[in-house]
Image (tube, rainbow, N blue to C red):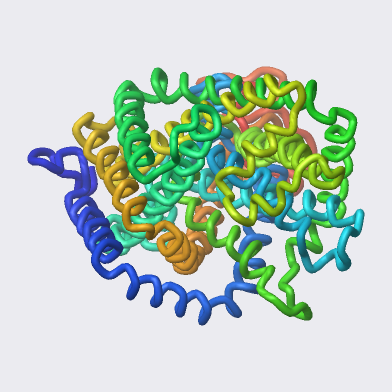
Length: 564
């Protein structure tokens, strides 16, 4: 199938894409080891040069992607199914939502749930003055904004594009497939290889930076619980153990290892939230979540187009631009994994599931965990903000220590440490699956040897960067890499609109399932009985004149009547 090798070490993979991706990973790894200072200087200079452009360009692009996703889920194509008309979803709704949330941003939420609200509380461009009571409210709204609908909008759009062309159009489950309406057969040549190569590199290094930060926080959790020093040696041991478990779970398959770990994530997360609600400042947390959510939706439009045009400082570049670039860089990884688990769903249920459910869960998570830290900070229970400035990895554990009795805070710290490990596993699992899917030209069945090799590569690269201290430099490089990929996504969006044009005649009650070609094929009304031997095409119930029927034919796509 399309340039996929049938024998040799690259059997089942696109040999050209596989070779180039391995070479690219090797070159960047060697540069990170032997030319660390030069690479860091180049990344810093490039980011400073591009920031004025990114401050408005990323804002516009992210707002457009969110608007397009909402339209796809509510507009004329909302009933189009990601698969054949008769297909049913591959996974149960609960398993699907669990994998969505766990693979999306689990590690990041644990890392930033406390650190970001307290950072905005210390200073943001929307609230001026020390000890301003509005600062706590705005700190949560800004955190919601960076982790809310805009972030999930870019994931949902890319996942929808991939699933549509992969499961409904029969194209490979790869980014290049969205270019088929525009490039035709050239999609499977060098142009497609370059698109997939960019996605693979962004996925590899996005996963590695996330694993590196997560391993550091996991080490901080072990230090908090057991007293074991969070040293580089202990972090390397943690990386080795997590890599081994991730490889075992991903080799067992989506329906066994990955699904079970994702479900464990979900229930452990629920347990943590229940603990915070019962033993935390319950009334304050509930009030904060409700108030911050309402304020977020009230200000979503203005925040989505905020570019910091009349404000001094680097707040916008350090926060919003940083997050928008990060989500764009993560889109191939998260989007392809979401597409892989979403076969059989309609655009409407896909959009509402991917866009709304994880966002609302994220809001509750941030509100309860970040709200607990804000309460301790504003009431004087603990000076968490100062400690966050010194060491971000300890912020969550310091917050848990404010809970009373002390045993509850201890249990919460243990629970968070376990959650970090399981979220690291799901992120690694999803990354390995996505890389192999791209290299296999969209195939969803992978050889264990390829899964093992890429699992080892990710673990080894994480260890190298932990030793060399190059995680922050690589993080900045990944954000800049989002710029060319954002252009690719815009082209993919055009390809999706081209592909959806064929869906205007998809069968739905009251519409024709083929394009009428002769006037006699459009009767004024449906006959009471229809002879299957008749040469006229089958139609559903309809009323009105032929002219009205012609307009109804192009009114949108939908489900097969048998599904209703």
